[in-house]
Amino acid sequence: MKHTPPPPFIDLRVLKEIFAAVLPPTADHLYTMMGRRSKPPSKRQGERLAQGIEKLIKRSAPYLVGIAGMTGQLPREHAYYILFEGLVREQLRAAGVRLKANQDALAKMVQIAQRQTTPKAHNMKLPCYRETRQTIELFLQDMCRTNLQSIDQVCAEWSRSADIHSHVQYVRQLPAAVRRFRFRPPTRATDKLVVQLSDEYRNAAGYFEQRLRLLVAIAAANRGEPRSWENWKRTNLERLIKIAENTAELAPLAKIIDRPVRNALSHGTASLNVNTGTVTFHERHQTITWSTAEFFDRARCLTIATVALAELELLCIRFTWECLAESLWAMTSGNDTGFSQ
Image (cartoon, rainbow, N blue to C red; front, side, top):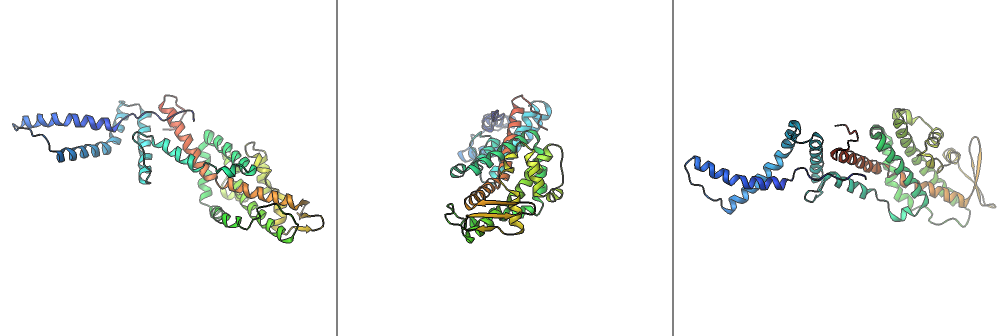
């Protein structure tokens, strides 16, 4: 990130020290006006006074910042940032997250989001996962920097549809399904092998289509061609793949799935030739033949790609916070990036 959090504009500890230094002389002056002798506060009274001052400062700080911003005593951008950062800070505290003294709340949110989206080392060693993950990250980074609102609108409409339930069920059931998958390439061509790989490919292809539809919808909204989610749901896989191929950032995803094979498995079964060790897929317009080893590799690659695609929402949250923090930090440093106040 190009910018860093600004230094604290108001240090509450400094205000506390100022109050603690000003109150005793003020109390002495009041006692003198009333003709009474002032008494030094006891230890218990001093502790209660310090607690009262701290509560007063924390409760009145937002109002003091607001007044300072309205009256011009504090730059409006700085006042806005202090108030927003304070809101995020209270949300983190409510969630049980501890912040160090003078630690920026937005920087903490970015740190949490980055930690949650850090890919596992063994996943990054798999080419299908690594390439899919990198494609999604580059796409979302570009979307967040150019049109963050398009992502929010599409994702909000998608989350209100029934597709979110299919997404949740796939992510929940994937660990259980993985236990039934083959971990090593096949050595013999059997009907059991074809059934297992067909089930794996069919399930992964269904989820892949849902994720591709969401990404294509975000890309279309960013181009100024928004459509309702109900409209996107009527868009078939062939059309989605063509749109992805014509979108530079999404083009690598279109190569992961084979549409004719997916159609053949959705409407029928694969045919195994035991003598040649090949599997034939009969689609309406064409016939495709793979070796059992190729079928295994393609099914496994598609499944691994869906693992990366399942992280789409977390990556959206991460890049949203990064872009928001970057804009606010640039605004407070005097380099306004056009953030809407």
